[in-house]
Image (tube, rainbow, N blue to C red; front, side):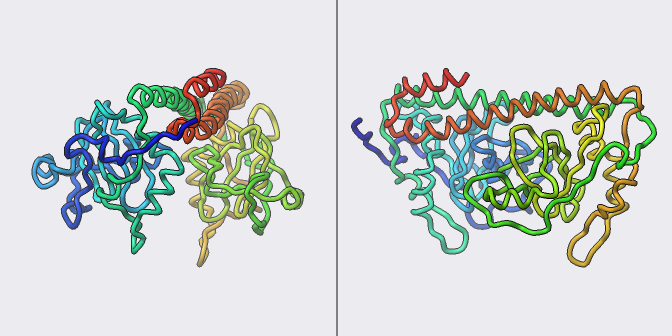
Length: 406
């Protein structure tokens, strides 16, 4: 297939459409107010291509109308990180605010709709080759950064507009399904939280009566590019296991690191040093060993299964227990694992446990299934994306692959 020629990014922008954030001292923490015009910062673009609206800060409307007026973004604009974590990108959403102020680290691209499709350019900047090119043209003195002029000179595939839209439709279909699955998983976990919260409370049980406690290795193996997972306490994220924060180890080390215990589906993983109070449920289909500073709880009976134990562990009452019994050290705080089996664990009344445990298990299983499907869809998207934006992969072939993936 003939290679697609490129044109500089500035050729696809509307007049004055490529603008950087305010430099110098025109925008900083001292300028933030409780209400006003929101500011787009790097953390709003850090969600795997999604624009995250949580954690917005604001500046007065008068500032947005005055000194910052040139540095505004509106729904539909493409926003890129030009300083710091280069390669972050997102499209400003339409459903929340009418306008935003760029932080000094961000740049805005407002596309000429007769020349380019914003979503196509968005996927161009999700291409690892484009991210690598962006880094290669950055000034690395101090914080890595590029200027709007450098951004404007980046080569972009000059696909005809109908082809751009077709590429965006195929990749967008995958991202839409990923977003829908993420909402499904979040809803399931919210329902599980609510179900545990409203269940009639019974007298606390001794933790050791309902769960086995096992700790992990006290060393770190050589990390590898692939293989079984060596879990990290950084992977414990609000009840879920985020494997992107963990590493791999060899099969040989895996055999040694699981002699004491190997995590099973439904085990409650938790940290007993530094990140105290954090826990997550071990999902199905993951072959892993416990990492340093990590232990697990394994349910002794189906009437108080892993999901129920997780919610009990994360409950305010047990978190208070953790706070009271933590051993404060000169370097790290830790939990006394030997004492934990005697700790009181808040659980529903005996007659409620089995039914609630089954409901929680079902909700967590649905959330895990949605997350696993998203892993597959994201891998397909990331495989197709470079070839689609460059023209090496025909849109029709990619559309069929997406259709086959459901």
